[in-house]
Image 1 (cartoon, helix red, strand yellow):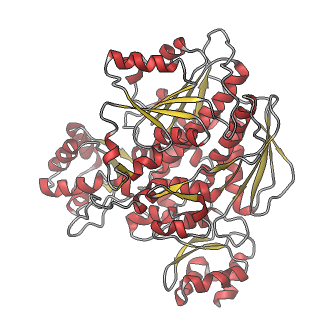
Image 2 (image 1 turned 90 degrees about the vertical axis):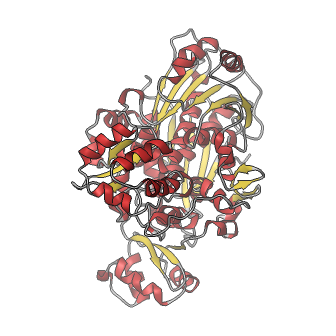
Image 3 (image 1 turned 120 degrees about the vertical axis):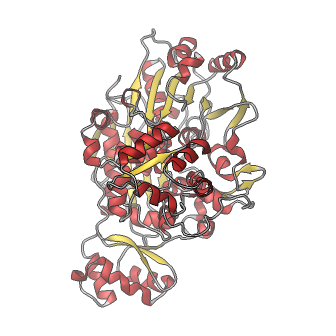
Length: 605
């Protein structure tokens, strides 16, 4: 394994405004683990953060990332970005009202995208293009996070969506056992789900009602459950529930804390190396294919073969396509089954299209010898092969890294997994299992005042961005080493990055007004005192007490008053269908039959 991929390169970082300290911190965290030497240039960028990537092989790449989150001309921090993008509302669906996610999610995602864009410019320069800048916005990163939910909300065909559960249905996973253990469960098919709940004493029809909404949780960020299900869980000790789960064929995971996770050898290794693992094959160095010089986008002319399902892997491919790569998506005969998931736009699932619209799709039966031969033939003309197959599947197909690197030694072979290969806890590598096992769910619960994590697919989205970034970094290293590369990323690695330092929501949150909700960020010095003056209280009252007075006026009435007092605030977007008309978010969206999130990167000449 190569511990420091970019030794000899430097990241010159501007002094961040206080609101973007988490963004700057995550950027620095990744840069150091990739081997970039960090220096401070002493410059401050109003309303954003700037940095410059210096490499021994290219001209400097300058990057400006602005907030654009409704911060009244100042840098908008985490709370305002979550509010203005609709992320706060998606996270709050399970509880019935928008809620601060409680971790530095937008800041972390934006930092991954920002460094990825800079590295892509370096790759583009080395391939003969001119890419001196890569700019973006933190709001654009936040919109990318909710892109599938935005597609869902704005697609024209809303038929076939998840039905409501009749009767009392306020409970959501995670569940709580009789001995107080909070736990997540994962079932990818109805049969095991029904067997588990039937063995726990739940009637078949009631368990079936729960399955109807449970299977939609990735799509809707909700999983309302009929009351008998959490009641049945609460009647049995956790050990007994685990026995029933094993017999039924489903997985359970307790919600571990970050403190529990910190002692794991896997977490210690992730903190040391970062969320990626790189290796270079021992084959004799070969000169890279020259290709053609990119013109409009830095990865233009590069070819990515992608064989991925669900969210994490497809999003990685989507981001590489946004950077200009030609992404060829491999689907089974008949196409990916998720293409038919409602709601539809132009005959295809809007959610599916949001992750795959920029790709060329081919159908190959990888279970057949002919299909595997076809894939191997295509590898000869590819630069990257990306998959998120289950452990052991690549070897069973004869398509493991050694198999394909033998065909093309300059290939970047990438796997986006749930767990690191040497630290698999024996759980399905899905978002909510990863949240529970890595401590992310408990961290979100503690900060959000909820029982569990988020039903927003937080780790899938962040994991996809980390995978794309790892591939871009490997492409850069490939140019230096004239050889192929191996890249492994995981949801567990994304979780480690997200929780690399504790979030400090401080004096921030979302609060009701007379006609909606406002997000406030009073972490800056003096902001709470100014809010107290505006609302007729004292700083000793605290933000929660002071914010109760926001109910006296409407959101539109409060925004200019707060701006005049120098208090960062933003309207909480509660209906994602309104985002295309949002003054800051609208320009970052396109219309393709539903609201499509544009590329988070901009490459000025």
